[in-house]
Image 1 (cartoon, helix red, strand yellow):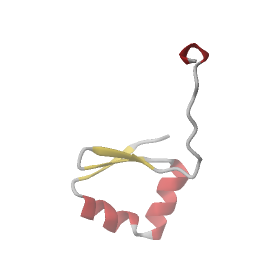
Image 2 (cartoon, rainbow, N blue to C red):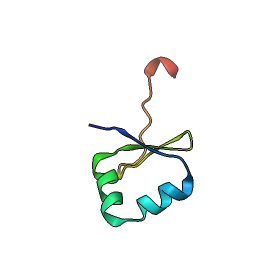
Image 3 (spheres, helix red, strand yellow):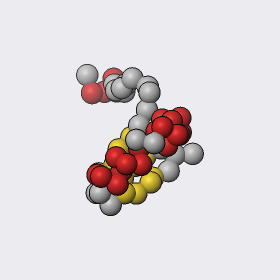
Image 4 (cartoon, rainbow, N blue to C red):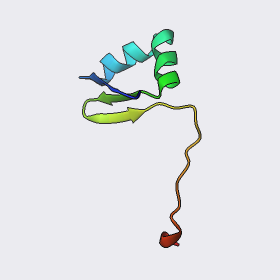
Length: 56
């Protein structure tokens, strides 16, 4: 299950994500993270854009 972890500042997030165990867990679970009202998504997957045939 994906969930959102909140950080008040970029510095707080950086110090947390720089711990290897935290980074591995975030990438493994694809957890969403909110840093100062910006939501970050961490994944190893390549970006894939869905194309709707009606948009063509």
